[in-house]
Structures are given as C-alpha cells and as structure tokens.
Amino acid sequence: MQRGNISVQSENIFPIIKKFLYSDHEIFLRELVANAIDATTKLKSVASRGELQGEVGDLTVEVIIDKEAGTLTIRDKGIGMSEEEVNKYLNQIAISSAQEFVDKYQGEHNIIGKFGLGFYSAFMVADKVEVNTKSWRTDDDAVNWVCDGNPEFSISPSEKKARGTDIILHISEDSKEFLEESRIDELLKKYCKFLPVAIKFGTRKETIDEGEGDEKTSKEIEVDNIINNPTPAWKKQPNELSDDDYRSFYEELYPYSYQAPMFWIHLNIDYPFNLTGILYFPKLSNSMEVQKNKIQLYCNQVYVTDEVKEIVPDFLTLLHGVIDSPDIPLNVSRSYLQSDSNVRKITGYITKKVADKLHELFKADRKAFEDKWKDLGVFVKYGMLSDEKFHEKAVDFALLKNVDNEFFTFEEYQKKVADAQTDKHKRTVMLYANNAVEQHSLIEAAKERGYDVLEFDNVIDAHFMQHLEYKMKDVTFVRVDSDTVDNLVQKDEKQESVLSEKEQETVKAVFDELVKGKVGPSVTLKPLSPNDQPVQITRPEFMRRMKEMQALGGGGMMGMGDFGDMYNVVVNTNHPYVADKLLKLPEGDERNNLGKHLLDLALLNQGMLKGAELSAFVKKSLEFLK
Image (tube, rainbow, N blue to C red):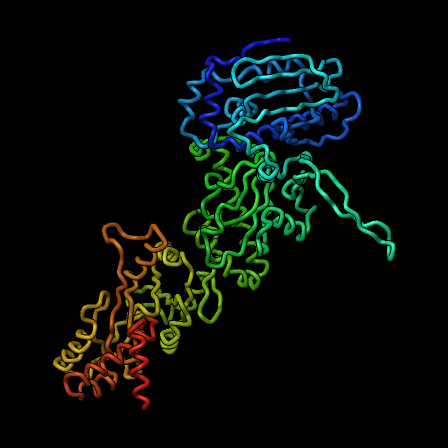
C-alpha cells in the first residue's frame, strides 16, 4: 500500500473547502456526475479511434445510495484510471496556496471548479472518499484510493474487475440529507436532467400490457429509473424537430406550466463562439416579474444556473428556455461574465436573433402578429426601453393599438393622426386611455372632435411613452383625462364664458368650499361647450405619469418624494346647470347641494366616488325619485 500527502502547500485546504463552499454544497453531485460523464465520453472517443479492446458495452452512469453503510456512490463505466493517473489527477490540487485561494475568492457565491476543485467538492459532504477504479487499458491494474478529509491518502490494489470508476462518499453527520432518495432525485433532476449519457438512480415500477383482445392483461414490472434525457431538443438540428417536438420539450422544461409558448427560436452557432439553445416566448399578458429567471444556462449539457442576467440583456430574461455554451465556464464570477468578450458577443447575438425572429413573424403574417401583441407587447416594450440595438430593430415591428382594436406601426400612426392631432407647437399629440371602460365618456368626447385614442394599459407604459417621446422628438402622449377635451390637443382657439367675473367668483367659491380639506383636488373654471359636462375631473399628465413611473420603480424624480393623487375639478361655466340653475338658487344649502351633486357625478364618472360618499350619493339619488 502506498501512502502520501496530497500536493498542496497548506494543510488546511479541506476546512477551506467545507467552510467557503458550504453555501453551494449540493453542487458536489453535479461535479461528480459531470466527471463520470466526462470519463464515459472519453471512452467513446478511445473506442472510435479503434484503440479499445473488447466491447464498449453499457455505459449507463449509476448513482447508488446505501443508507446502512452511510454511503453515496457515483459509478461510471468510462475510461477509468491507472495508479499513475490517480497520482496525477487526485493527489495534486493545482493551486499555489490555500490562503491565496481564500483571499481571491472568499466573497464569491459559486467557486467550485476553480483550480480543479470539482472532485474535491466531495469533501463538503463526506468524511471519507474512496475511489475504486480500473483503467480501460487491460495491462493496468485496478486501484483503490482513500482519503479521509485531510491531506493524507492511501493507494492500494483493488479487486475491481469492470472498467470504470466508483466514487464512494462516506456521508458526514451534518450532510445526512444526501442519503435521502428524494433529495438525490431532486438534485439529479436539477443538475443532470440533460447530461449526454444515461444516468440510473434505482428502479421504478412500470405497467405493461400482454396479449391481445380478451386475452389482454396488464402486469407491473421493475425497470431502471433513468432520470435524464441524453438527447434534448436543443442538441438537435431544427429540421429534425416538429412543432410538437418543441412544445413537448417546453413541457419537459416546465412541467407545471399551464400555457403553451407562442413561438420559439432555435439558437445554433459555432463561430466566433459555440452556442446552442431554444428560447420560448411565453404568454406574458401584463405580468413581468413572475416570468423572470426561467432561462436555464447549461455548459455542455451540465446545468449551471437560471440566473442569466449577466449572459442575456435584462429584457430577454422574460423569455423561457435553454442556452448551452461551452464558452461560458461552469463557475465564474459575475464581474468576469460582465467583462468577458465571449459573453458580450453572446448577448449581442441573442438580441439580434430575437429581433430578427419578431420582424420575420411580423412580415410573414401581420394579423397573427397583431393577435399575439397582448402577450408580446410587454416584452417588446421592455426590450426597447432597455436595449438600444433592440430598439433600432423593433421600430419596424412594434405596434400601437387604439381603443377600436386597430394596430399601427409608429410611422403608420403618426401619419394617421397628423392632420387632426398636431398642436400649436407643431407636436403630434397621441391621445390614450389606460382603461377604455372607465374612460368611455372621455374617449367618446375625443372621438366626436375627430381624434383617435390609443390604449395603454400595461405596467410599463408610463416608462415606454416617456421613452418614445424622447426617441420620436415632436411627439407627446396625453391621456384623455389629463385635460378637458378642448385642450387635449392645444390650439389657439378660445371660447368666451357667459358668466361675468363676479358670477365666476361665486361659482368658484361654491366648489372651493366643497373640496376644502381634501388632499389632491384644485378647482378651475373653464368656458367649455354647453354640451360638455358641467363638472369634469382631470389629472395633470406630467404629475400623474411621474406617479405611475414611481410606482413601477425607478421613474420618480429626485427630491419630489411620493406623488399624491392630484386632480383638477374643472367647472364648465357655459353649462346651463352652472350658468343658470346653480347661480339662480339662493346662497346656502340649496346651491351647495346642487354643486355637491354635480361634483359627485364627475367623481363617479371617474370611479373616484367611494365608501361613505358613494353611499350618501346613492341614498340622496333615491330620495330624488320619491
């Protein structure tokens, strides 16, 4: 038996592994199974060159729990190791010093794999590790290597007859969870679901039919429990896959998803970097956050993470699917990813592919594209907001939808409304509603003036409109409740009030008293058409939009604090209820009651009359009917 010390300058490498890799301790299984797959792949390479004597045989990798012995075994039938190779690969940790390792990587979340630590991750969960291995070379004897978590190891001859390697972990007391079948099954499905060699974890029951017709019977048999799909869809060529294949793979990735994706992009590039994958466009509707972090990152079919924001632009994290690239190391820091030239090229490539796919769909079948806009809109708008290159491409297919369910590109819509909706400052005014039902009367009033009204009811629309105003220059967005209809598109036209200045002061005093003590409202008088409503509620566009942007996050203006619910009570001095009826009533309760009723109607029209005030309004209205 040979004894020796693992080649590392400091003897405290094992406590360091335990301590600083503890938050990632479950990754040991990924590392060890990935090593087993690597050994198997190398054997296939040897066999393909005609150097292997005998049959390749079954290459299934096995993961075996022995609760009684307290061990977890990872077994492969791959290339194996000779005694010389064991000394070379297991007895040298390629780092200059343990302390340097700690100093350099202490703050990082995921550092297994740096400096060849993959195999040594076993010591995060095991007190003792045995490696029982036999090389593919028939002249080499089998070897048993044992290490109990310190730099001392022993190597002795082994009785192992079959080619390959068994890594036997004697699970430590504080890691007994890794002797539970459910825990290992969970980790295998998380990290090894698409590894390229079959992985067996125990057995499972399967029902099969025997015989035919009346003689047909069913019986239960025991079969190997293969936990992975070695040939996932993204490793195949697009012409090998049908639409059903893509949908089936989506269900495999997201078994609890209740909605099929709208469409997908198959990524396949080998220069100037290697990248494969499939990205799916889910139905987003009006939600964003719940959809994020659904892209899974793989490195040669080994699961790495679903935190891909350093790999893809933020807006693409709304997509679902898989990205696989050997050019993205298994374990790297975020700062490395952000500065790596390959990663930057990958983000640019994916952004271009996504934009090109959307433009292709738009050109191929515009009607179908419009039908999907409710779900696509969030994604495209978010992309235009957050990525300049995507914005440049998206202006050709991004859509604006009006309240009549008609769709327009930006250029088409500008041409449509230019004549009627250009204001005195030569700006195109794009009117919009954020709730077509609640704002119906305001929309109809705008239409009567020959205006068109867009629908913007998305969570990011306040930011998006601000973005478009910046990009499109002489364009401004104005909500239908931000001013009276005569002033939505500002012209030089003026209408005279039928009231004298003194009469206007009397009317204003009535409404000032009604809103006294309330936070938000301010009263203004305006000479509108006698056909317009007697009292209207408007919300100033700028302040209201700032409030909405602040609510979504990141849109508030410095020093302005929280925006209250500010609104204007606009009294139409030319309406007969104001000019005639209100002023002819005696000063006091009667006049105030009519003013209150007109104000309540305006608030009710905006959905702003609530609680006790709404109850009182209903009660009073019923009394009028008596």
